[in-house]
Length: 274
Length: 274
Image (cartoon, rainbow over all chains, first blue to last red):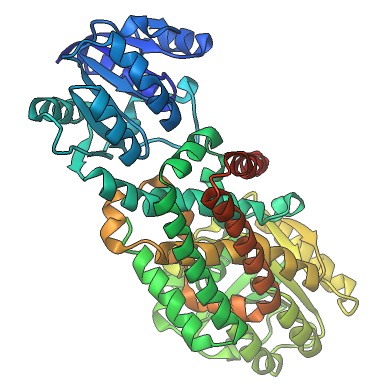
């Protein structure tokens, strides 16, 4: 489908994508860029990439460029990459926020389409890469009026081949939705684990472990995400604060009826999430 | 080890315990009490109990009585059970809060020891019972100055046979610890899922699902728990609110350094929780 795919950032998502592309023969050649020599060596030894480099020069001639670094790096590297990439190259990213990235990158690359595959885990790096992590997941595409339909169609087809269902959202809708479905759970998990003294960990049950699993996520990555989607994330936190305050108030007032109603509403809602 | 064990409440924990007892031949006879005929029928068909009854009369002659109903029912049924149980019977419960239960029950039963096995899940009822759910878990025992050492030793040995490691805490310490390690994560999960509109559920990733899994828990059970451990739970909520406010404030002020410090601290902490 592509002659040469360049993946900038051979971490968990970039590396998993590279493995998937090689496995499904979506490209004749896959090259990787990373700041870390060890990451490139691992990617080569896993057969995820054909060639790797710490420099961006290697992406020259790629007909698909995938930016798979943390959000901040995507923003920082874009200009430099555009001076090496051909004008025909289709460019996408896998960043967890879209407004800032799309606004910037669609002015830099003639054939840019924003992507956000809803895959991944609290783990990081090529060492945990797995071509199957995309199986059955969805990828949000964020085309705008500036997006070329050929580029959009090629990216859609690319994700289909990877094994992912695509859904289109505006960058604005994407960031609003994700602030609630993804950024807020991470903030809740970070805040929750900070509320539990380490000396109590021996009494931890499955509930505490599950609710805080994602607090072990890459903090640099999430720092970028929260700052890049600041207004929506602040609103989402305010909503959680409101809901916590409702529980607290009912409990404080020994208002069994109100508390029962809140818990029941939450349970019924959670049962809809499969 | 016992001639006759009576389990009052043949739900997830009571039923799983009954299966475990039968499997390991900890008692010659196991009888069950439930308000629900269907629960008793299921418990019998699974071989969890030898006999079942909706009336408490069946517990007569039991040398171990295990109260496995929700907290409120434990408190409500205790007097009635004491009029049927022999004075020699060892009595324990598996309630998730201990101060209120122990204070009441040790005045009612001559041989009472409070237990809280840290096992279970968001699922409920005998239909999900599994003798293995206790494997590798711990059970907190809450003896007081009034607890008879013979009763305590028998209960310790009982849990050891079930496959559980016991740890002693005062009822007060138990409730303080559990308000943070267990009650707070449930409140966070209930509040978090209420912050997410159902129309966004199609975009839910693993993070949202994990952080809210326990919001599908039995609400009646948790209502009792929160009300029974109200002061500690209110304090735990306040702590979470404080930690959320810290994140919110750093994000609001675009204070990258403070935010990085908070997230990193949370990540390092979470990595200690295995």
